[in-house]
Each structure stands twice: as structure tokens, then as C-alpha cells.
Image 1 (cartoon, rainbow, N blue to C red):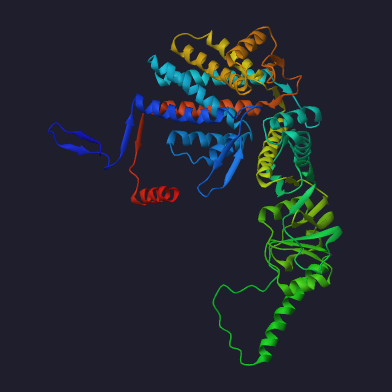
Image 2: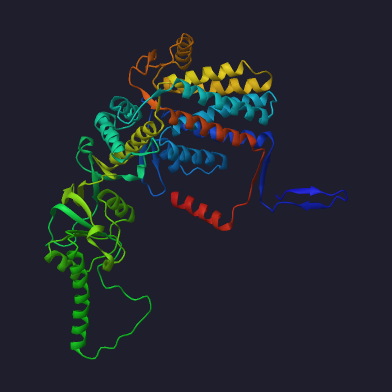
Length: 546
């Protein structure tokens, strides 16, 4: 029904079109809070080393088994507009910190649960939001105060950061091996800029091949191309490789305009073919004249050009992805050339070895021993495809955690220890406030404490008992007291090696607070009517499902 207002004359004025749905006031806020909390509850059971996995089946029947928060939210195909905000927040957390997506979502759900209690006491959303913002600033300040320093050369701490990230993953049987790979990969690509370290994880190439075991996963200080050498007569192994990296075709390109060529004798056909062959031969000669013994191009290589390259003893790979071309250029020191006529000896890159190898059922080209290996490759192996996919997600999280630690240089203990300290800092702030704002700040502290409670619950322990014991330890000054998930008792998690970057914790609190305050500000939801095409699509989908 369309939204109407009545003039003094009694004539209705239509504001919104027919079929638009409107929810406003307290009902709109409650609906949005309920949607966010529902998503938060779904992710809660996956939190921590003892968390469970989710099986997600898409409309085509493809199965994903994971406990990675960002992946679960991405594949759930959420429809509710407020719940979609959680997906965006999770993606933002994943891009910014690379880990901590579940923490952000669970915290957002707990924050809104506490906010709902305050709304029931007729506390205005604006006051709640202001209290949350003050509490967030204090929580992050506390995390930075309790943090411990780390450097890129501190191998022991960086290994513990990677291992902590892998504790809740399906690959934990091989976590030592994978953690070592993550630390070495980050070290290889890290750059120092103005006395600070910068890590661009786009310089880590990840290739997946099922077969073998997780322990066969390896770090290659160079680039791996999921391609094979184009011609059987070409060498399969080139040492001291001089690499020409091209963004140009080694083939006769068709003109952009339509042309018709009239040929009235076999001799003309032969002359045309000879001319094309001569052009390609000249291109190969120009490449060989620079001293190149390996050619890697983003474009195609004609069969005739392949023949001439093979005669020159040049190894060639074609149709390589642009991103891989850039990594090769960066690692080998080559310049990407778009016109073969411009290719010079100084444009060539160098690598100690370029070799085609068989990995599983496929052939791949390995480029190793580059003079500036600022790009590296992780080749992931595993018994079956879904394990390899989960291993990729685990490795990306470990890489992100180590990169965060290197860039920020700040670490904190996991297992709920840092959350308890942050909550204590927020409660100290609450003591300096009065009125309704104080209630909002205290509510924030309770939401932070819900994270270690979830950790205890998923490990099979009583969450309230665990929280009470942790509070007692922190009141006695044991700032690294966290939950031992095996016994449920307080333990020094720093000494156990459960260590996380401050950035992951701080960004999770920021992301959760942002989505909670955004939801609390909404007091009116106006949803347009679905178009006929959408309705038909939805109906068709249901029929197909049946």
C-alpha cells in the first residue's frame, strides 16, 4: 500500500509508490538489531581453536566447508539490508587487517544486544552512540599501552603470530610448516620506507594444486606460472636465464578495419605466407640479438614464431596473466616491453633458473633465483580440493597477521587477555562519567568481555565462570591472563605463545562499533517494491529448487 498523508481538506497525498514497505521508529531499530544479531550468532560457534565449521552450498550445488568469517558471510547470500552491512564491515576488516572478521561481527552483535537493553530504558540512540565512541577510543588506547614491540628480525615472535592465526584453521596439523612459510614470505617482500616497514601482500602469488599433502606446500623465492612451454623442441630448463618480458604478440595481428585481398594464383598465396614468415623470423631475430634465452609474453605466439624460437634455443611461455607479468618484471628486474622493436639488452631480467616441472597432473614453469625476489610464490598442496581451498584461506590469514605485526611493530596476547584489559580500561573511563552516557560505556565493556566468553563456551567451558576467573586475575595485575581452552582456567597466554597483532584487535573493535552505531542511527526503513523481473527470477529459482 502506498504511503499517504491527508491534507486539511481530507484529500490524500500519495508520497511513495504502491507496494513500498515502510518500517519506522522502535520497530525499525529492533528489526535491524535482530538481523545483525542473527548473523552474529551464526558466526559465534566458529570462533576460536575449538570453533566449528560451516558447510555452505550455493545454488549450483557447489560446497564450501570453512570457518573463515569473511568467506562464510560472502557465500551466505544475505538479503536483509542491515545484515548486508555486516558483510561490508567483514570485507573491510579482511582488507585492512586480513584477520579478525569473526571478532568484528561477534562484537557488533554483542554491542547491539547491549544497546537494545539501553533503548528499553528509553536512552536515546545518540547518547548510546556517543558513549560507544568514547569507550572505543579508550579501548584502543589501552591496547596500545599494553602492547609489546616486535621487529622484522624477531623470528620467534613472528612465528608465534602466524601459529596463533592458524590455531583455529583446518590446517593445524601442518601449522608449523605453514607458519614458517608465511614468515619467510613476508620477510622476502617487506620494504623499508622512511624507517618503517611496508608489506604489500599482492606480491605473494598463491597457486593451488591438489595432490600430495599439506607438508608438500612450499615457498618459492620467485614466480610460478601455471603454464607450460609452448613448443616441444624448446628447452625445458634454462640456467642463468635472460628474460624478455613482453606485452606484445609474436604473431601477425589482424587489422582493426575489414580488408579484402584478392588472390588469383597459388604463387601469391605462397608469397603472402613467406612474407608473414619473414616478419615473424625478424621479430625472433631481434629478441635473440638482445641475448634473451627466455621469452614470457602476455599475448599469443604464432606457431611459426614458436618454431624459430625453438631453433634459437629460447624457452617461451605465452598468454601469461597481467598480474603475473608484473610480478616477473618486479622479481627479475625486467622492463615490460610493448613493442619488440624497442627491446634492448638492458630491458632483460635475470633469474638463476627457469624450468618447466610437473606438479600433480599439470606442467608449470618455475622462475627461481631472481636478483631482486620482491615477489614470491606459495605453492599449496593438499589431499583434496576443498582442503587446498581452506589451506589458501588459512595461509592468507597467517600472511596478513605477520604483515600487520611487521608494519605496526605492536603485539598483544590472545586468548581473551587483551579484551579483558581493554574492558578494564573502558570501565575505568566509565567511573569518570555520570548519567546515561556512563551506562553506554559500561555496556561497551560488557560487549568486549563477551569475546572471551564465546571462546570459553566454544571450548566446552562455562563462560560466566571463565570470565569471573579472568577478571580476578586481571584485577591482580596479570595483564596477559587468558583462557586455557583445554581446562577453562586462566593462564599466561603470552608465555604460551598465543600472540596477535594489535592492529587486528583494534580494527575489529572499530569495525564492530562502526556497524553498531550505523544501525542505531537508522529509525526508518523504506523498501521499494520488487520489479516484475526480480519477482519472476525469484519465482523461477524456487521452481528450480523444488
